[in-house]
Image 1: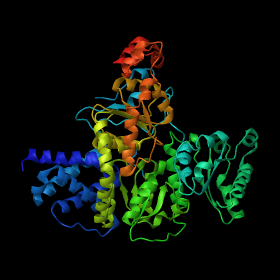
Image 2 (image 1 turned 60 degrees about the vertical axis):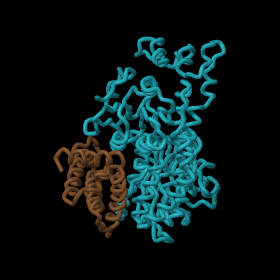
Image 3 (image 1 turned 180 degrees about the horizontal axis):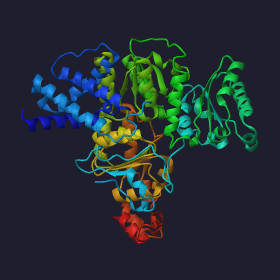
Length: 117
Length: 500
C-alpha cells in the first residue's frame, strides 16, 4: 500500500470515529487513552477475523465498541475487506496516532488533566 | 475561520472566544469555544443557577422523595413543575413542592430551627414517604445554616427515614452544571453502596443521565425488559431514592446525558470497576447502535437484533414519511449542552434536517469537542448565547425551526419562527425509535403550522397576508421593534436583512 493510499484509509477511519464514537471524548486524558488503546486493539482483532479476549469488564466494553466500529467500517469502506494483517496493524497505529493527537495531545479542553472527576 | 465577534457584541468583545463558525478542514485542535466559564458582565445570559442544576434536573425527578428547599419560596416555585418528568406512582414529584419559606427574621436569626420544623412537618404530612433531599439556597448558605447537622438530628428522631443533603447554592458555580456535579459526587460518596440489590437477571446495568422527560425512561424500559436486562438504577428517571443506593451492584453503566451525570459514571468506574458505555438514545440509527453495543457487552446480540427489527418494522415507515417532508429544513438547537451533539447528526441522517446554529447554556469544552466533530461546516457553535446574539444569528442563518426552552421560545415566536421545546419536549417522549418519530412529528407540525402565517397578519396591512414569513416582516412595520439594535445602522437596514 502506498503512503498516500495508507493516509487516505487512515483518514476514512478517523472521519468515522470523529463522527460516531463518543469513547474518544471521555472526561479525562487517562480515560481517553484507555479507550483509544482498548477499542482499537479489539478492532484490529475483529478486522483480522480473530476473537478478542473478553475477560475483564473493560475488555467487554471495548469489544462492544469495536464490534460496532468494525461492522460500520466494513459497510462504509469496502476496502476494509481486503487488508492483510500488516496493513491492519499499520492502519490501527496510524488511526491511534491521529486520535491521540486530536483528543489528547492537542486538545484545547482545559479539564482533561484535572485529577478529580 | 476564526472565532466570531457578532456586531451586537461590539461592547463585550470577550464574547468572541465563545462563538465559532466551522469552516472546511478545521477541527477542534484549532478552535474550541471557551465554555463552563463565568458569564461575561454585560451579556444577557440564559443560564440557570447551580441549585437549579441539582434540584430541577436531577434530584427533583425522584418519585418517592420529599424535596425540601431551604430558602425563600421563589427558589422552590421556580424549580417546580417546569419540567415534565412523570412517574409510575402517580407523579408524586410533580404534585408537591416543599420549602422552608425563609423570611427576613430567619435570615437574621438563623434558619436551622425552621428547617428542622419543616422537615418534621413534611414527614408528618406524608407518612408514606420516608426519603428526603434537603437543598441549601443562596441565603441559607450565606448565613451558614448547617443542614447536614439538622438532617442528622432528624434521622436520629426518625430512624425509619433517610435524608441526603445537597449544599449547592445558586451562586456556587457559573451555571446549573455545578449543581449536577455536586449532586453526583455527593450521592456516590454518601449513598451508593448503602443498600444491597436483589439481582433478578444475569445482565444488570445502570442507565445514567435520562430523566424520564415525558416518559423517556418508561419507553426505554420496555426495551430493557424485552432484552432481559435488569436496570439497577435509573439516574434518575422514574427512580426511587433507594434504587440509586444500589448502583454499585450493576455490571455496566450506560450513559446518555454525559454532562449532567458523567461524574457518577466515572466514579462508579473508579470506585467499583463498573465500565462506562456512552450512547445516544435520541435518534433512530443512534438508538439501534446503542442497543447493539449494550447487547454486545452482555453477549446477547441476537436479542438486540430482534428488538431492532421489530421496532424498525413499526416506526421506520413513519419516520420516513416525515423525512421526506422535512428534507432541507433548517434547524437551530439552543439547549443545555449535550442535546447539541446528540441531535445534530441524528436529525441530519434520520430526517434530512440541516442544523445551522447551536448554542449551549452549560456545556463544557468536552461537549464542544463532541459537537464540532459531529456538526456541519457553516454552522455556528455558541457557548452561553445571549438574547441579542440569538436575534443576530437568526438573521444570519434563517432557521425554519428552533429547538429551545420556553423563555427563548417566546422570543423567537414573536418573529413567527416556530419553536419546539428542546428541554421538556412538546409531545414526547423523544428517546428511542418511537420517540424520534414524535420529535419528527413535532418538528413537522411546527414548521407547517398554519397559525404561524395567520398570527403574522395585520389586517391594516394588506401585504402582510402572505405565507412567506420574511415578506410578512417586510410588509409589517411592527417587526422593526424586534431589531432595535443600536449597533446596527438603522431599523430599516435590520428589517431588510430579515426580509432577506
